Length: 565
Image (cartoon, rainbow, N blue to C red; front, side, top):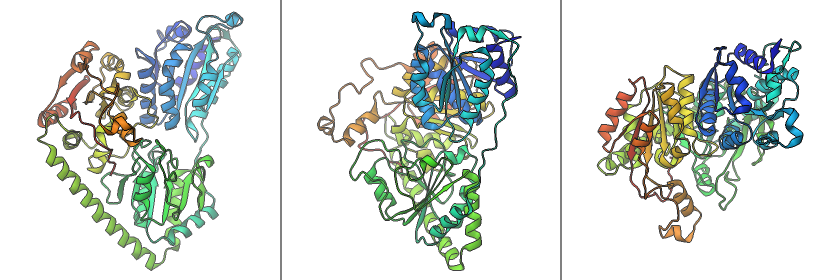
């Protein structure tokens, strides 16, 4: 005999799950009660569902496995929905569970009860309420497989409290076993893709987060080097993981944010190979609305047929595992490329290497010109941070108007797995995400770069960092405003924004005291206004065994636009 909640713990623990991120209510207490004596799973407590979900998100992305959360019925799920949206946009494999009211009360429309599956379904791959205790093992197996198979994403299970507590001797505890999802692409499609690439005079590659998430970085590097093609990352609005090594000479930096700028950036290319990204998810409507110039011939590789030709017609669409597809395209190129084509590829690579080096020199000069300004400029702040971060760093970014992909453009990121940028844009994600990353990678230094406005949404997560003694360095890029909204207002051409007049976009009068707030949650905090002192403080942070928050006041003037390369 075993209860429903015991069966869930058994299957998850056997699968290798070690953490459950949660904030409990009455309908979730069977799990917390069982974990008093069953220590195979550590319950990581968050004080509110925003940091809870963000922690699970960061843990899943870093570990590459399932992140498990347990939130409160209805209201708790409501608090978590912004972070669920982030996970959905990222394709993060999360198992989100919530208690449901006792089935015997359902007809009476009890307090806190509701149709949670209807709420969660639009932002999950699968959402279901388990109605019988005997269904729990099948629901757990199906949910984990659904979350972890491409296209990956979150799933949701509602668990009535009586189903959690009910016992049965008819529970099928067959372990969770995942299928091998590495599907090879069709040979004919690969050959057609290579034929188009061989005809290119000036090819480029657009790459996104799924290159890293599917372990295909070395294959992408090999193909880019063969083609002599620069690799451009997806726009900052959806750029979540590194798509290409930041120090490589073929790193073409990131796409701009808006359609006209994207068109201008891509205008020189005649063939573009797309891999590991959604083409394209734009942020603000601009004319011309088509971001990809019409003459460009597109070759698109993806594991999800839905992405091929979804927004832009493709010349060749290749369905298959990201790593296998890139490898087979490279192999086919080696078999068919002529001596002249190989020579043109080498010349292109040399030309792009010069451009890459010149771009970095210009950026370093711009940083040097701003180092004496006070308060620090965003560029000076990021240049300072770039000097001291170790090669094995994990960086979580939720400070878009400060970071501006500066670390990538400087080549400061020495590894290709430890970068996590915002993709869904529900705020409050970065602080909790960094905690989850640290739990997944306890031996790697973790740096969270957070805008003050974004961090306030998830500030309660500092308590969890203190409780579990997680040595994360939280840097608050503090400009006391929602600066991205000022940039957006100008981009929309709003009349008062053109005159530098804004309503309710400041976080001042009173300004938040981040040092006092952080210390109230149990996290030591300091305020740093000088670049050299900031650098020294960060060097010390990597040696700590407890978290540290660094409040960095930045220039308050909003830039006219964001620069991504």
